[in-house]
Every structure is written in C-alpha cells, then in structure tokens.
Length: 158
Picture 1 (cartoon, rainbow, N blue to C red):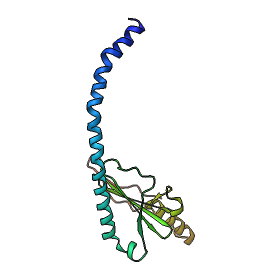
Picture 2: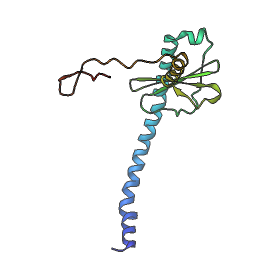
Picture 3: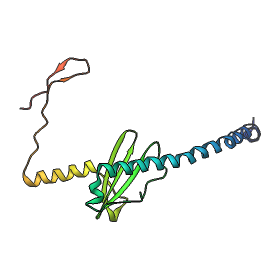
Picture 4: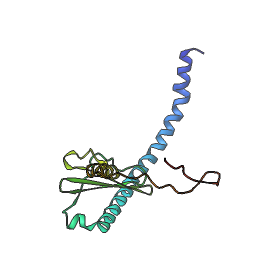
C-alpha cells in the first residue's frame, strides 16, 4: 500500500473510534479532577489541625501563622497534603502523604528554596562537632542475621 492509502485508513477507520473514546473518557477524567479538590482540601485541613494540636507553641509562643504553599500544585498527587507555617523569618513546610511525614525548612525571603529538616540538622550538628573538637565514634556493631539466617559477627577494626 502506498502512503495515501495508509493515511486514508488512519483518518477514516482508526481516528473516529479514538475520537469517540476520548469524547466518552474526558468527562470521567474531569469528574475525577473535580473530586480531587475537596479531598485534597480535607487532607490539608486535617494536617493543619494535627500541626496545631501537636505543636501549639509554634502559634501561641512564636507567633507562627499558616501561609500559602508557593510552588506546590493543588490538588497534589495521591493523598498528599502540604501546610506551610511562617515563624519569624523561617518557613516550615509539612508534607504528609502515603504514610510519611516530611518537614522542610527555609528562609522566608527564598520561599521556593526549602531543605529537608534532617539534612539541615545534620549539617548543623556536623559543624558543631567539628568546632568543639568532638569526634563521632563509629557505630557499634552487634551480631546480625544474614540473609541465610546464620549469625555473623561484624569485623573488628584494628
């Protein structure tokens, strides 16, 4: 078959059923998209309540307040919820979803440049330990189970 015959088959036989399928499925996708917003709002509201209950000092003692989540799409994917709290010149973004909680911190002046709390604390701790001359000892090693179930002692350092 030549190129014109291929084009005719695609345009007149293949294309119409695909257009009809898209026409039928598009409202279903829009419906799910419309349902995502109230669910995401409910997740976000619940996260706000949980933060206020677990850390009331952020709001009462330090004057923290909830600010818009810049750079976060709404509604977020899956069951994620984002809440950003501004405290003085600091932003704390809480992210909860899929059974995990993540905290990011950053400057209020650079709201899109937030870093994981664990990373920031690790850097601060490392800087403190180097400044004080404190040196971390290597982790203690106990007997551990191997994949085959046999006990294997950790090698000793000499």
